[in-house]
Image (cartoon, rainbow, N blue to C red; front, side, top):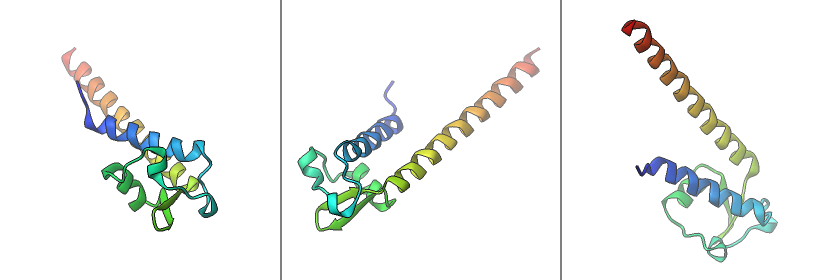
Length: 98
């Protein structure tokens, strides 16, 4: 079954990894994302709005590594929270079925 949320997360990770791989992490090392084969689509725009990708000059972007780490940590915390909630729900269901 296709989950669009997982596809978005995978695309975000891919974009962030591409910028890290070529060390485009400072304004001096900013690159045109189209050179990497990246489109200025919804996922890319979302990373720009969140301050993970920063436009240093027109059409040249770099990765703010600190913001990328904050973003990843937040995503991990949400995932752990969801898993804990699911575990509690399953536990409650199991208890009441006995």
